[in-house]
Amino acid sequence: MKKVNVALVRLLQFVVFVLFTFIVITYFGALVLVPLDAIALLIKLLGVVGIHGFIGALIAIPAVAYLSLIVYKTPGLCKMIIDTGVDLVKTGKARVEAFNEIATEVKA
Image (tube, rainbow, N blue to C red; front, top):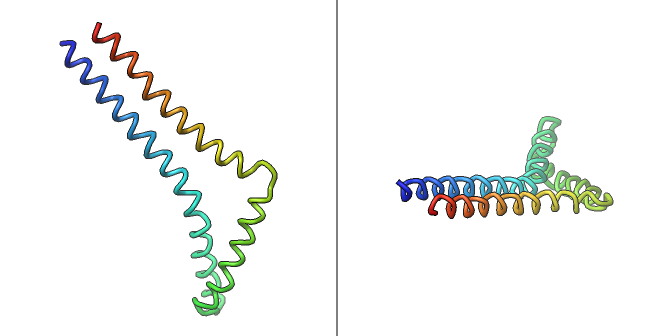
């Protein structure tokens, strides 16, 4: 019965590991995809106004780059965003390591 309990603890540990890995990848992926989505939406908006897609892209890319520069220059904002992601990684690591203690208690 102990082997089954240890296997269940290891299975839950793996599930928690996969969950936190997915959350961290999604968080940092969103940091990349939000400006790309803003470019796509701005190109579509300019298309509605009547500006062709290529010309709209030539307008949208510098506009989003300027907005990204403003975000970058905001004091403490970039550091806070990155620190939040790093805290997610640390929390995930701590939760996965907490299962090791439970597994040793179950084995004993």
